[in-house]
Length: 88
Image 1: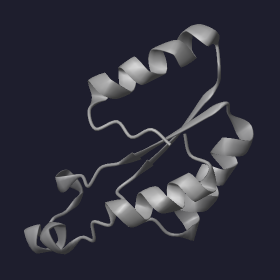
Image 2: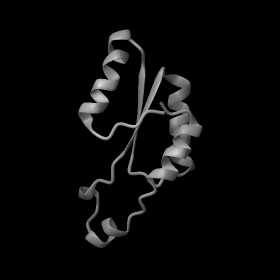
Image 3: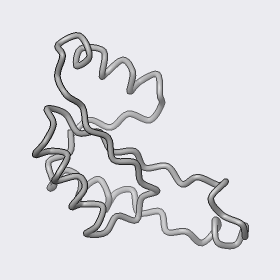
Image 4: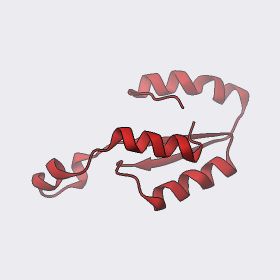
């Protein structure tokens, strides 16, 4: 599994995919993955040539800054789950 940490890096990685005409699936998340997320990833893997998952904890989705501060950030565990699910 390849991990990109910037949009520019992801764009560069996907340039070849776009040129080849392969179908790309995208699953947006805020991390702290659960079975619901993983079922979407598995569906994308089944339906597409490439599956991309974003993990972005979006501060604008939190009314209370305390909720943002305490939102679980489990990147290492999330990556292990995504790799097992077949994410590219």
